[in-house]
Length: 412
Length: 71
Image (cartoon, rainbow over all chains, first blue to last red; front, top):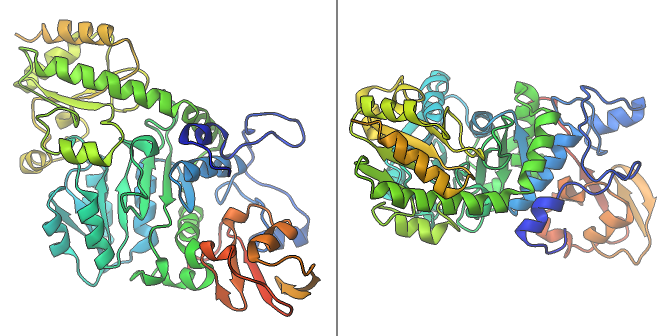
């Protein structure tokens, strides 16, 4: 790939013109299987030839998206899966077996918490929770069986940003990969490789695809971690055979064997979405900053939080580590009743769980996403009873301010 | 020079000096997805440009397209 800028790669990586028809968009290869002559099929199965045989294992439209995402993260390889949760799950299966552990920030998405605390713990893989920005706590939790450290580039919904320069020094010293979920930021706002991430997980559902269209996920190997030094028993056999490509290969094996593949249709939609990623992220960030400042000053809002506000405790780290503060903000309005009054009164903004859509979205996390949290767990994760989480969209900022203002007026 | 590529004896022009040039000369598809083993050693990707090839070398190009045992 020529030395193109991010915006150019977002549009061109992974898809040239079709050699047969000249079509300039990658076809949606809506095909479960691919036929070859027997020698060729054997060669493809045995890795001697590049080709496709079954869409659960690999699909040409999905592969085109993987190339595009890999280029955006300046990575070694990307593997696209069915959802952001599948991406995180795949990383765990690629590195851990029963008896292993990993360290995770507490400041993570509700479903991630349920996955780690539920299904993963039940498999005998221990999850060690630490406060997102407490680097000493991460280090204290690492032992001989620790396979990786996990956190989000901007915590959900505390909107906190950990210092990755210091954290990656810790993971490097212990020879374990640093896994960063960049769903809130995307490669446009967060240069994962530069800040020491070994693996990046994305829910492509959100900003990468945009438009609230298609569930999908991706794992990117940035190439920063030398898999020859990995402690993982389940990864070691592949290091001998594939060298630096061991992790990408392992993730593909996990995908193929568990079947958490991305559909060709969703891969196509996500590729199209990525073409406008830079434009959309710029608008999301500008709108979110303006709306956060408006809400911080509003008399019906107790607390407004946004990584770009001076009141956010990790603002300086975010400013250094990210190219923008993202599109997510939260507000506290005093009580659950007030929050519901607000959510019933919004006209332009939609009440639903998702983020990264062109449309502005608001949700009450405590009794939806985080409903299975105990009160203690909720407090520890910053999911207060009066908290509303907003995914700021691409609408005109004055229209957004007007809708928030009138809906906040419904609070008595 | 004579090289063994994926188990097959092949005649390759002497002007092909490095692994990167060999990938191009042999029209290896999707080179960014291929693992390269040179005389029994798996190469780091940065080494493709700097690793010279000589007569009698054994090179394996390995893809992974999916499936198979988990390890």
